[in-house]
Length: 288
Image (cartoon, rainbow, N blue to C red; front, side, top):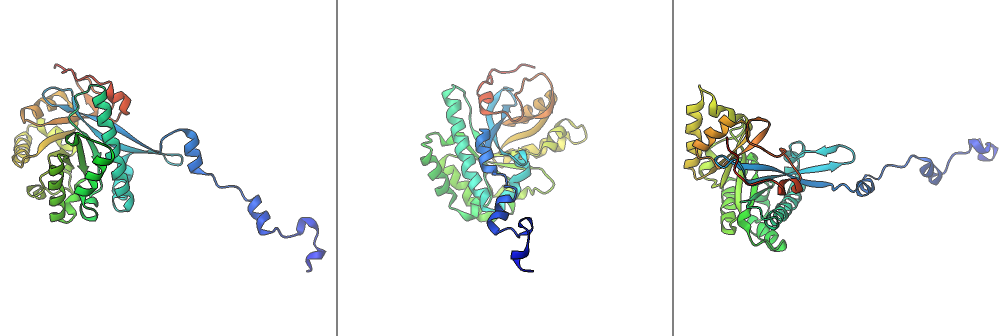
C-alpha cells in the first residue's frame, strides 16, 4: 500500500518520533547526586582492648549506597570486586578514607592506635605494593603510617606465596601494619602464616565461643598460643559476653570486636558506626 493512502494516525513513526515517545530511562547517577547521599561510605567497628575494655583501634568497612540496591555491606560485594580492577580502585579509596579517619581521631584528641583499610589481595601480584602505598601516604601527607593497618582477606593465602610474603614485609619498611581476617574459617589454611609475617590476625567469629567451651577450651588456648608464637597479635571478632573477654585477656590477645548480639556489662558503640559517632566514644576503662 502506498504511504500516501494511509490515514495520519496510521502513518509509521520516524526513528526520532519513536525515541521521543519511548519512556526515558532513569538517570541513576543524577538521582544519586541529587539525593546528597555519598555513593561510598566508610563505617567503623571498635576494636576494644581485652584488658582495658575500651577502644584501642577501629576496623573500617566500606558500604555502597545504591539508588537501586539500597545500602550494600562489604560482605555482599568485596570478594566479587577482588576479582576485577574495581577491587584495586576500591583499595585506594579505602586507604584514603582510613587515613582521613586517623587524622580526625588525632584532631579530636583520641588515642587510637590504628584504623584498618581493606585491600584487594590482587595488589600483591599486580602492583608494587611498597610503591603503591608509599604514593598514597605521600598523596595524603600522612606522617603517622604506623596508624594505618591494611586488612587482607584470607584469599591472599591462595595468591603467589613469595609475592605475598614480600608485600607484607615491604609494609614493615613503611611502618604500615597488616592484618589477615577470617583465620579459622573452614576455607582458611593456617600453615601459610609461618611465612606471612602479618602483624595481626583476626579470628573467625565462630571461634570466640570456643574460649569458654569446656570440651574445647584447652585446644583453643593452645591455638591462640600457636598464633602468638608466630609473632601475631590476635583480634577476636564476634565476642558475645564478658566471660569470653576475660578468657581472651588471659590469653594475652590484643583485642576484640563485639558481636551484634553481645550481652554483658561493657558499653559498646554500634557494630558499624559512622565516623562522627566513633569520634565521640570514651576511652575510659569499663569495669566488670
